[in-house]
Length: 213
Image 1 (cartoon, rainbow, N blue to C red):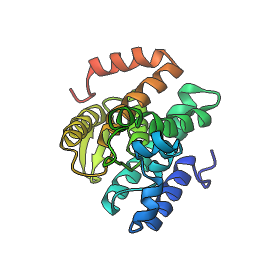
Image 2: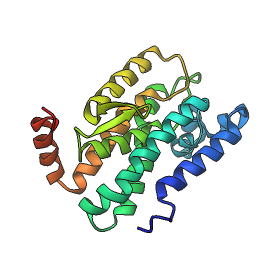
Image 3: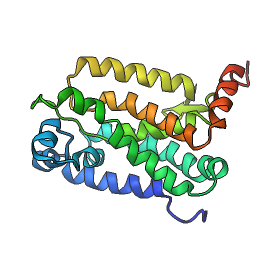
Image 4: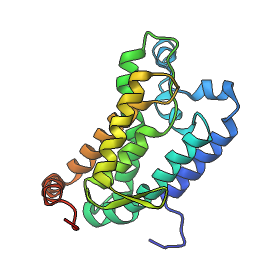
């Protein structure tokens, strides 16, 4: 890949930031795109499964999601998928990300399709899918929290899921926290099924532990 060219991850981050910024204070626009199970069921607005991934609750929500996507997505798109999954790596990456947004909303749809007060937004499902798509390749590789604190990816991933589960139980915001868990499962399983040997590789690498032990 030409290093000067924009990656698909760069484009997704750019488009998501533009749409999110434009609608940050536009509640009508957010309501039209947000994941709202009752509207989906009553009006067959299936587009909401995907459109909700292009809007965010606030600037912090957007920055965190897009920074994580940019960091992990470029690694997955430009290195791991092409080197390990071969043909159609770009298409597989797009299915991973956008599939993560859609699939991660299914449990919330089934749970809240009769609850008019529930809505959610954010790219968390797709971002989680990308993060766990990287984790299956290198579980003990460090990520750097705030660019400084080194944490093995697998430990950060587990902590992230626990946090998401806890926040989902509280249900006191419009962020789709359950999507984090479902998206993570999708990303891990989808990537693994593209090359079954990755499951064995992940188990062996996990059992070996970090290189500094």
